[in-house]
Amino acid sequence: MTILAARCHHRQTILGNSMIDYSFPPQPSSFVPIAGSRQVFPVRRIFCVGRNYAEHAREMGFDPNREAPFFFTKPADAVVQDGATIAYPPLTENFHYEAELVVAIGTEGRNLSVEASPLHIWGYAVGNDLTRRDLQIQAREKGRPWDWGKAFDNSAVIGPIHPVDEVGHPDSGSIRLTVNGAVKQDADLAELIWSVPEIVSILSHSVTIKPGDLIMTGTPAGVGPLVPRDVCTVSIEGLGDLITKIGPRE
Ligand code: MN
Image (cartoon, rainbow, N blue to C red; front, side, top):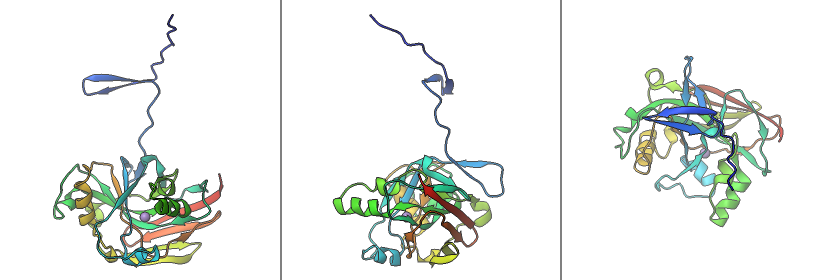
């Protein structure tokens, strides 16, 4: 005998010619504000580049020769907006900040040349790649994925996105990070080992980049810990400040 469960029609969405009958409402897309606009930028995926400043590669114990860049990802719903207070995350005793330039993709593309890549960029933002360093290093040592060190809840702090129309394509300028006012990271975007157009080109040979994709481009030297009650500020010349407050442990 079959017992038929009552079917709830929470939400129906038209996709092409077919009606999708979701069993419960799908989560709305994560988004980031757009500077100077009432519109917001819907986030699709978050790609991150590892070791893209020579001094940071050295401080993590690696030779900063120009090996091909490598990528890891964070879930789109890890996005945290400017000014938010986030809880100190679980499972870590060494929770780190990483100041980063963020690239926001606006146009689909694949197998892009370095010259064509900037045409696919919608804008730029300030970012903070929050990291459970102890879990990342354990994973690295055991040859396991980095996810538990990098892709946890509230791990991608992204500031308002500045359209290319207004800020161009920043390839130099100060990138700084302070904790409670003390300078911890202080570098220049010109020190990126792999430039933004090179990163977008290389990524587009691995996956099709699409509107809403964000790329965190790597952090300079000086990474270090955050503890409850810290206030962490990332600043990039021309892109403003990005403030995150650390709350108590969850
Ligand atoms: Mn990073």
